[in-house]
Image 1 (cartoon, rainbow, N blue to C red):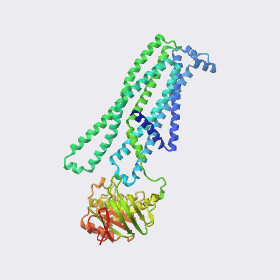
Image 2: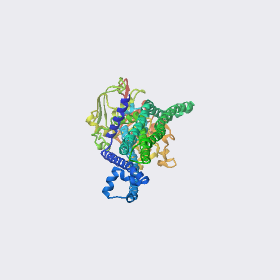
Image 3: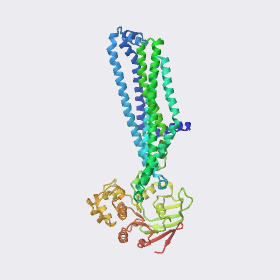
Image 4: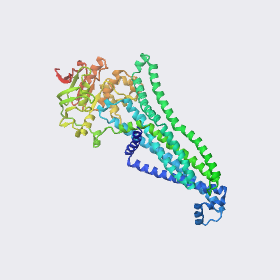
Length: 590
């Protein structure tokens, strides 16, 4: 298990690096150089402490230090008064420069982590949007929301911790080297005690970290799932008086999550208190040893001062490494989930950009050739042996019992689902051929679809009707025209701000029929060659449904319309009517 965890951390680090652009990789190299500069100035800080303290306590002994002797001979300095002020000023410059570089490193690390997080989060969301439709049907929405909304934050934190670990490690190495120059024996003893203490604590708490990691990942998804399900079934929760039951379920999961975070915080911060107390004991013992037995040429107070200042710098760095390692260990499941999600298939690399702006020029007919279809997680075929031709400009009616495969059938024609066997051919193009993916994208772009449950955004009526082309300027005249055809214009124009009045989230201030009419208006606004109505009038009263059907009938004869319903009377204006029964497509007499 330990080996797997260490391997996962290393592999995840490499996988994150793969997602860095060349520009970001150059920034990372610059950051690493800045870290080395910071480490070098920390080295100079410790190296200059010895002569600095010696100058203050016993100026004449500065000439006994080998390095100082060579420097003063080179500069032809004979008297301590000649270099006291310049050296103090130089010492201050070194300290200020070191602090400034460290602050810059902190700022740059935060910005770098945020930029990488932004790129990865946007890529994850973009991957989600471009997943094949069938993949969307298989996804757990709570897990997706957790991955894109929360786990990416964990990844940003992990990237930041990686940088902090590297910074702390490099600076620590330079500080230890400078400490070795002062006194090898004491430096080795001190470092051995500090490092072994942190390693012991890390391995002691490693099993707890594995449990914390599991709880954080699982509990987050469960909380999101509870919130989603509660929002979607709030009517039933109120009617059944289940508020306390749902709240208690959420309370249990939230407590698990908060306890895990609390335990992680304690494991990160707690050891420092023990180490600080231990460090004071060590310094006290070493001070006694120096005063009693040390034969160094340095004044004991100077040597103790160097040890104290070095320890004061090293302790936070060791703590930084320790906290960083714990933090990275506790988020590996979440980070792995993000990286796995980033690898899910989206657009083919060779997809032509024009596929997003050009429409398939539908001229003649749609041919279904020996179509079979079943979902990936099922052995049962929803559709079997479908052979049919639909011509441009036809009004096609599709009926069938609930669960017979009506929606699956039109999803196949729209190119959202790929046949398990058989071919979907439009004019002379086989859209089932993976080499024709560009044409498939253009075909989808030429389709307007009205589902039974219409998606609405918390925005104006005009924005909701023009939702298919929000990147363009809304054509208000066309908005009004399609609203009139959909028999929703009178209702909209009675609102306080007419077409600029705001629709509540999920259309909570609208009836089911009003939502469907807005969906129909939106589909007509897109001005496609094909219109699919999937139970799109099921929430309308009979009179309104009749008026809309008559309005649709009067639309251009170039518009091909597929109407899916379980009410046969809705299809009286169709040119042909088909029934899906026992996985077969049967043409009925109209």
